[in-house]
Image: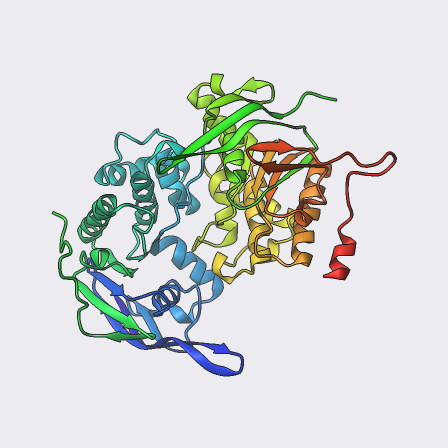
Length: 235
Length: 244
């Protein structure tokens, strides 16, 4: 599904050597597979996600999604790719105040050519799968933080993307709610055969993945980080 | 003077921080009229964001009355509350969207609930044009400077043509020239569209271009001393740019 080939992104620094944010990363992620990139702040995780989202361009290498190099897309094509083929879940919860959970989840679908009524109809089963069937008409501000993040996951998956990127998605949640959200995220994406790339500095979050790589100074290492004592899977 | 669009009458709000009660608003009073630009400044943690959230109806005060267009917010039904927040009150957040969408799609998002895609995009385009950011319609959040992000956040706030715009510290991290641009934009929106603006800021120079000014300190909203007779309360920022 997703293949990164010798991906490089350096940032120039005045009077100093460039920062090697991403430095020759190669990685393959299959449909329905959940890969976690684990590493401390500044290790290059977010830069790597921004490259995969076509938010920035690599200095070298290729990013192939189903064989198409997304780093060669025009700005317009990249915007379309992010709207329709990519889901992105972040720590920040950008819900519209005063709008219902259902409308907030359906917004991205509405932004494609799907009408608002049809978008609400299409997303309802996904809301139920994420345990939000009794919260559809509740306003954004009436939802708990965990519910808000589940609405954001529903929004990200609403266009049936092939790939979902998650940047510290449980950073604003407590341990238990974070565990529940990640369990739902991994199960739902596996069912829908969505490839997931999660970046996190939290070993408990990384433990939900099928494969875990450590990112250090822009390079992937093939050894599994120490996740001793952390939940491997939330069944 | 005409009846205020937004009024806070003896509003109090406290939080518990561990065992300690923190009183962020204490009998705070405020009136904002249509076509008026009100700025509130106070140090970090003074309660500015809480003030805006209460004004938006996103939080309820412990005591006191908040009225919008003469109606007590606590007496409104949930659906009337929601309509108010969706349509009549715009909120510009400091944190911004961190959205992977194009800025046009991002500004159009809240419009999609009640309008078709074509109309939502047209109004989003108008909002971006109004703040001078239409050339950034196809760009994404991460590619914008802090000043451009502040302008797009304002476009997002005004796209639904609200009557009241609540703006949470829009000039954070901005240089003086960009601060001026934001303040001029807010003033022109107020003067040209009769919009009411309530803006918070962490320091005094930022808010000098507003019509009205209050300091938030110790939970109280305090008006500065009146300008001497014959002088305007509106202070021109141009001298600050030269001295910066």
